[in-house]
Length: 530
View 1 (cartoon, rainbow, N blue to C red):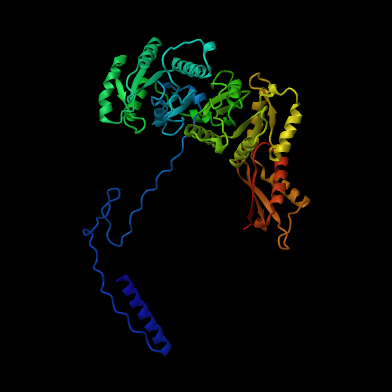
View 2 (view 1 turned 90 degrees about the horizontal axis):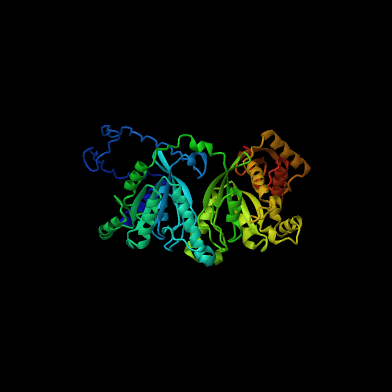
């Protein structure tokens, strides 16, 4: 039917054209019957807005009130001024009980790495969880199985790592205001849970027993066996599906002292976020512990010990820093384990939120292709970059200046970044890391005066003009800074699309040298003048 109607209309249009050519009038179109007016009550009812009566036909519809813009709450780093005033709520439990899943559910974002493999969490992961106008410092720990003490000298590497995880978890429990002990409702009660409950009672810490993985009525009925732990109340939840989370939040807020975030985040806003990245076993966690002065991250000879991104506030020499220890990043072709993929994704996400990246290089293995890719990634993300050659105590046969010159020769793009040689194990050279980070962070957030910027651009233009494009030579009029972190500059030109890449690099280098912007990317673009 639709095709026939289309043919009929085309035929009538052709007849009208023929009549015009003959000088006659086109046949009058058949009048269409008028549409009946649609009543307000007929068909779909009109919606009432804010209690107003339905509008009459032809009347102006009331406009919706614009939604208020959601102002993002600034992130509060653990260890800062605001975080130290918050009550510490520690999630403890046996391995694979769902602590990290519950941790992410309470935070309403993915912070801890989650995997079905038991013992994924090793370090203590801290983050600020906000619930309305209240907040707590939420702490995720590794496997906690009571006070199992063995001889550390007789343990193999795996047992020593498990012991370090357990000791770190116990240390976090001793500093807690409230412990949320997570039980595995799917696996049932075990002797390790009973031993852990007895150990918590000896420490006189308030404990909330939470039975996780109760996502079916059958498992909910089986949860009564956990009352053998001596708990007055069991809170059934399902961290994977969100069941019982509001009730758990009410219990946590009722058992912790009130603490608000009034003005706390502003005190930590000036802190420099430093992401420490590199290949596995390059010494990133050792460097974090050396800078902090205590064992924040677990250090082990096994590659891939760190899995989560650990945020820690540090105040030193009048500066404030948020050190983010990340997992080692290997070549993509060598990453097959889903757990390692999650750890790498967490490290890359931490790099995207940083101001400065500390790229840790193994002095024994030297600069690899993966190190160059990580440096290029930090550059493309617009982060400041400092190269730290670790384990320098193992290369006593070479001078630092010669080694760093060879690095710059292997990758000329790295010549414009600060390079340091340190030993995180002995502490040699570590005192130069934070001052270098402070200088790079200042360049990364620099505000360039417009008058001085235009003087530099015009001097560079007079010293060397850009190549001609089809017989026309581009002219530069003026420049302006349009962004920071990293510094972003727009240069207005007569032919912005005709600026050769070599002249682009030349102008960027002139600006960077004039303002001493070492260690930070500089974004320079060209635009036509209107």
